[in-house]
Image 1 (cartoon, rainbow, N blue to C red):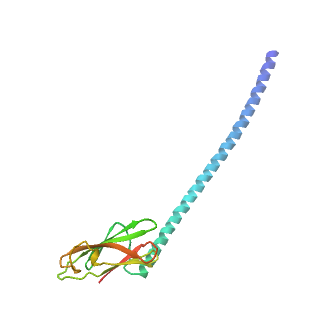
Image 2 (cartoon, rainbow, N blue to C red):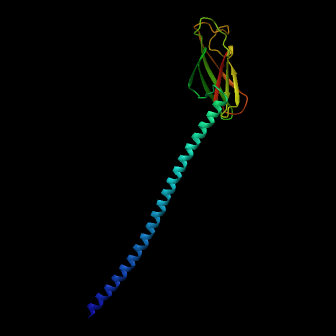
Length: 187
């Protein structure tokens, strides 16, 4: 009878242990599922945010293209300003041009290097004007090629037949805005 009582008590203790363990497992399962739902919600939220960011980036890109198109249509023959890249012009005797940004963030300077080439039979007097525009198409600076800006030590201004010459200087800004476009007038 004593053995039956001890076995009964052990059975009751084991049953209570199983009930407690089942309760703890159930609460841990609820906690785990709650965290999993939250993580899935965050993933869904992150995916939602990523798709919104992608849509906004496309919209910004489209607006930039529209702005550039409007500026291009307002002022013909504008070229986007690219720094430290040779831009072929090929207009009359102006072969190409390159722009460089120097200075500091507070004192920006914009320089150019223009290459002129006379493929004709007669000498010509170079007359080139470089005009810089900001993102809205407002003129922000201008430069005129001058005799003292040439790489040649020729005494005259004329560009002889078959001669090639480079001019370099700074563009004087009239407004405190960064240029984004340029136009070259060759006369």
